[in-house]
Image 1 (cartoon, rainbow, N blue to C red):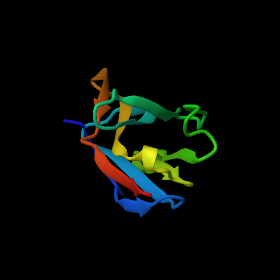
Image 2 (cartoon, rainbow, N blue to C red; image 1 turned 90 degrees about the vertical axis):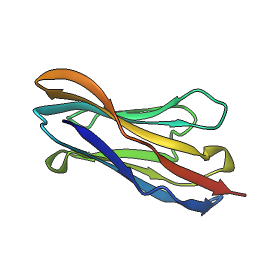
Image 3 (tube, rainbow, N blue to C red; image 1 turned 90 degrees about the horizontal axis):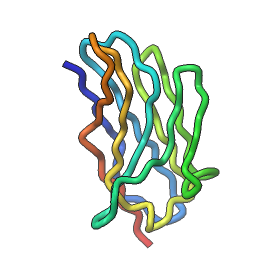
Image 4 (cartoon, helix red, strand yellow; image 1 turned 30 degrees about the horizontal axis):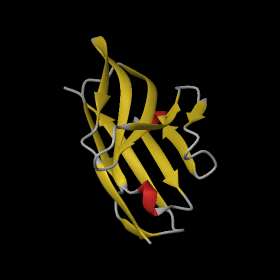
Length: 118
């Protein structure tokens, strides 16, 4: 059984910074792409960033230059460093990962709440 567990969500003031982590565990063969999404109340889940095994990254326009995705392959962990946070960044943040555990599947974490106060 594969699990993704996020951590680091918190309440932060606008202009502040916050770091999220997401660790994968279980019967993992290999992990390819890992990413972050978020979902605000009443809105669809939104792509934020993705990182490949080799470290190539892509970002949504809404967070490019403010958020940085990174990963530690030895720890099966992906990170999201968020700077210059805005109230509109308030959402539940989810990580996902494409993992081969026998077969190839996309797994999701349970989400962590980030609230940015004005």
